Image (cartoon, rainbow over all chains, first blue to last red; front, side, top):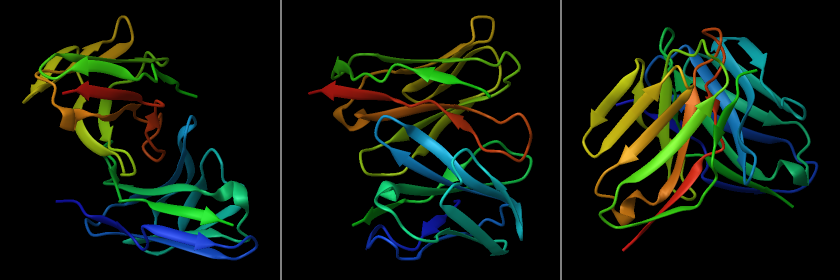
Amino acid sequence: DVKVTQSSRYLVKRTGEKVFLECVQDMDHENMFWYRQDPGLGLRLIYFSYDVKMKEKGDIPEGYSVSREKKERFSLILESASTNQTSMYLCASRQGGSDTQYFGPGTRLTVL
Amino acid sequence: QKEVEQNSGPLSVPEGAIASLNCTYSDRGSQSFFWYRQYSGKSPELIMFIYSNGDKEDGRFTAQLNKASQYVSLLIRDSQPSDSATYLCAVPPDTGRRALTFGSGTRLQVQP
């Protein structure tokens, strides 16, 4: 079974704080993704990574950065959290050559 | 950019009925299609995928693909209250690196 884990289920931060969201997968997948999901807006891709130290911007990268130092771990960083970054954050991973994505449980982030 | 359209619902069906969920897509070149189920407050989980025209059955679920008309459907037979969730349709990216493109989802309510 593919397992994708995220460091926190719920997180509350203050405006201006630096926030780290961690994602780990145990299936040696090459590709990893960060989405955010908001009511009425669906799933929106923030960043993805296709290899260690490689990253590409998704559809809404502004205000975010990512890090992938090891194959199994993909981190999303909010450099200076703002209230409009309150959302559900979902990590996913995928084996190279496959289209199927597997999601982690999600982190519900609230920025006050 | 590929587009995937779904009726947001809610679609309400009585227990034991057949629920029919539909999805249309813009790119005629799309080769595979995915259905994910998402319970409230949870992350999406893969139900099934389909690559070729026609029907694919898995238990109570049947995916139907019509490439000429550019739509894909998910039928749920003998609907149960536990099937109440949002169902997301997704198509793969143009290249092997990017993420699935998701529809905004259809909320299904199965009435006991």
